[in-house]
Amino acid sequence: MCVSARSREKAEVLLELGIETAGEGDEDFDVVVDAVGSRAFERSLKLVRRNGVVVIGNVTSVRALIRPVLIILRQVRVVGSMAFRPWDI
Image (cartoon, rainbow, N blue to C red; front, side, top):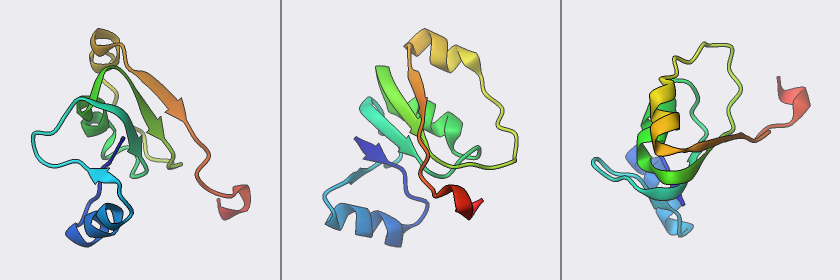
């Protein structure tokens, strides 16, 4: 499993918890958790292995441009997860 962190500090916290973070050039993770949203979605699709899973857990009103070719050719499953409390939105 891989979690993509936007800052070195966040990556260090994840490493302390025993969670691997993605670096430049890393790919082929079984599961990628994308808690960032539309800005990071394409990167998440590139990090996951063929037949892997991308879990998206950020709700945003910003439209995400999705290139279906990344999902189709790599046979990736995209799963939504409610990573917030309903009253937070």
